[in-house]
Image (cartoon, rainbow, N blue to C red; front, side, top):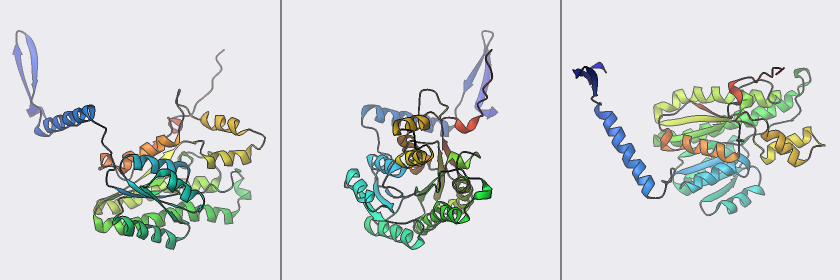
Amino acid sequence: MLRLLTCRSESKKSIVNVVWPPFVTRFSSSSADSTASTATGPAPRRLEGKVALITGGASGLGKATAQVFIQHGARVVIADINSQLGPQASDELGPQAQFVPCDVASEAQLAEAVDLTRAHHSKLDIMCNYAGITGSPFPLSIADLDLNEFDNVMRVNVRGMMAGIKHAARVMIPAGSGSILCTASISGLMGGLGPHPYSVSKFTIPGMVKSLASELCKHGVRINCISPAPIATPLVVEQFERICPSATREEIVGIINGLGELKGAICEEVDVARAALFLASDEAKYVTGHNLVVDGGFTCFKNLQFPTK
């Protein structure tokens, strides 16, 4: 890089003439052109022509992600165990959405969802593994842990996710491209934020992603995960209602939104959906094996409350 700089002295001043390498000038030019086109016309749709399969897409984060993906030009198949909410969500999302019933605890049903997506759209570009369960919301002691419940949570949250990745990879590897997204949680980054079965299942996801990225990257397939802060989704609110039966729904939403650390903002479903949009799009073409934390700084520090007097 020193060869790119030429120094000379004029009028007792040291002037540095910077000779930029070609790749910098090319980047600057293309960036300027891109900015200009955006300023003079509509914003580009970042998933134009892409096909996405979203498990757990009938509600919550999955549905919000489906909506954002469709807004950016994708065709979306939502796979969900809820046979009532699924068709409703598909109707609400419009003609670019399709519903297929799927229990992610069944590998056969996941494989069928992938095959149906490819049969209907001729390809699969994006796989979002969003389906999951919390198990009992009550933080029981390890001495009282029901291992049957633990097995059930792991079957859905870990084995189901691995099966989703497996069958997405089965289609994406021959195609030589694809983006796989997995939902983790800040409960998988810090202890004590959730019941043991749920937290353990979420601690597993970033490790799973890194392990699989080491293989999938050789085939042009990217895999990443997102760890969001608590969001007042219907599922989360329902869990809190079981823990705090005397609290109103408005009070519970206030409690959940008050858990954040970033002043003036709360974590909403659309924030996670936009993070997924980035990871699924070509803007993240060199991002793989990454855990994108969407928590407003929650896991960055421990807030110590010192007396002021």
